[in-house]
Image 1 (tube, rainbow, N blue to C red):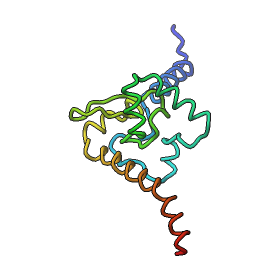
Image 2 (spheres, rainbow, N blue to C red):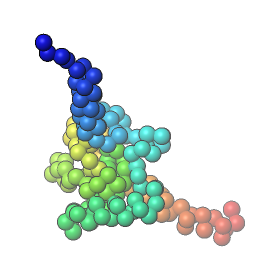
Image 3 (cartoon, one colour):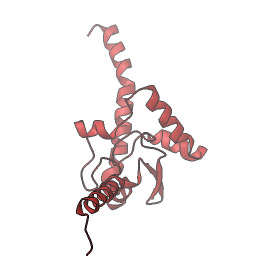
Length: 149
């Protein structure tokens, strides 16, 4: 008569399911959701503010791109889907969106980008607008101080 060992079988099944789940999760941006704004979830996805060690990892990830692609990724700065700093999750992935190269932080962001490119590409425009505003802010503050207002 054959003796079954359900504990061993269950443990093996649980281990396989755990590995499969971990492998399929990708980045923390759920596929159909809107981009992450200022929330705890954004902190999980955006690793840009973790310091020098993270900056070195970003630089190393971007260095794996060709010179041309690295320049494009550095200009783009963020993933349009997850809004994380390109390179913070490894080497950015280049995707052709309507004939234009767009970089994403990971493969998990490919499908949402291709399903609704206008929605996500708008995030790149928003990020560029914020960068211009951030660059202008110190000058505005200095001129305000000088004028006494």
